[in-house]
Length: 360
Image 1 (spheres, rainbow, N blue to C red):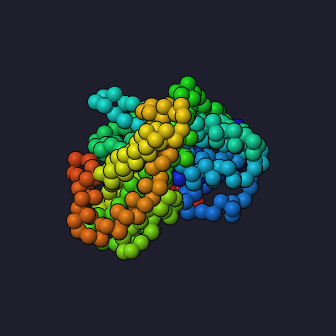
Image 2 (image 1 turned 30 degrees about the vertical axis):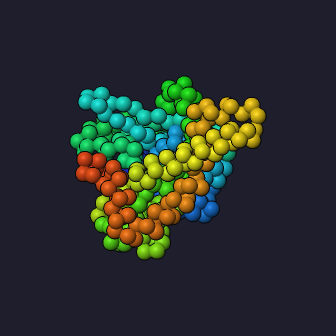
Image 3 (image 1 turned 90 degrees about the vertical axis):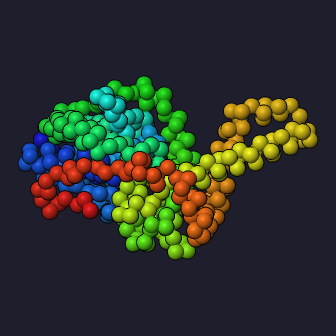
């Protein structure tokens, strides 16, 4: 089957998904097929016209909370209906390397959710493919060493290119379905991430005294989640934790406030524990001893933490104007220490074969 045109839409934070999109772009160009590639953070999807008949449409994005990030979910959901077109979905996910062993990441529900949406729009799904590129989420773990990153890239790139050749030449590849059992098992985490964890992580970023207010993070944030408040960078709830700002800050001035997060969790737990004890000791409710269950308490804390987080983050932001508090918040951040490092995707940007490359 020869496609009339291939159109690739991608979202990327630190470059993994972008490199994946460009590998597929390269393979499409080799076939002589007309191909376009777009960064969805730079375009208005309301201006996208309906694809030409017999086009192949690709959606490529990192995995956030075992799903697509909100910007890609919205893009897929509002994308135009099919005109006898096919589609493929590719996700980059947190691959790791321990010694000589490569450990794949997890995809969760994103392939199945995307497939349902696109099928309802009339698209034929010809490819569902996970790409195990290095994890960049340095808020949770130290950065992968550059040698390890290069080795993972070297191992993965041929697989992505082979996938591209297959679907562009009319074959189908549903490798993602091999993970369906583990995807189903971890699917509840997706709900927790979308409604809770995403906003929790959004309020974990701070700028240290090394920040010279160059504004690069604000200008390049893919979802415009960063702004200047009271002379200091401030992260809003629009943040997707794509890690672009932290990993690309020229002064390494952006940190994850681990100490602050631990303190907020402790404060919320203390408050909830006191409230529960007070209610039970004063017998406000009968037969409510189940509130003493630690799992129940933890669940209540998860729901109750957001007021503390919102107020605490704003207070922290104000206190960081004072050197003592700024040092306390920064020094209690693991990301400020050299051993933690920053993630840098290899320079695998592919060849720009035409003026249709729109990757800025």
